[in-house]
Amino acid sequence: MYNNSYKADSEKHKVFISYYHKGNQKYRDEFERLFGHLFINKSVEEGDIDSDNSDDYIKHLIQDDYISDASVVVVLCGQNTWKRKHVDWEISAGLNKKVGGYSGLLGIHLPTHSDYQKNEYHSNNIPARLADNLKTKFATIIDWTESEETIKKTIQVAFDNRTNDDLIDNSREQMEDNIA
Image (cartoon, rainbow, N blue to C red):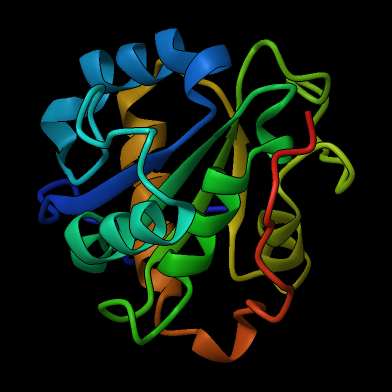
């Protein structure tokens, strides 16, 4: 899963954390508490975006003000993350060269996910765009961990994979609605 280009003193990468706010906020907070010193957080914070705004406005705001400057998108995969349109939009933006260049892509199964600690993933219960890029080997997926070493290495792997842009699959239409 890891490559040899990781160095202990590697630069801090700009990371956008994508997740289902309602179901997984505590894991997002814990991820930042445990590992926030390892990266520059480019994520949307609670209250940054008014949910009363139009979908198009929100989509462009996330792309232009957050993801355009991120080098890696980390997707925290809870049981219902795959159903959320904003997560799909965020992954799509990270894979769109026009939105600041390509971002690496890393999925993390949360302990609440049915595939957690099974050493596998099922494409029907993770975000479809993440599954597409796991199939092409552009993206990586791991289980939730509190290991600083594992997070450093997998973020570095995702960052390094940005150069494999021929493996990116961003062909599917963006979700228009949440599934649940």
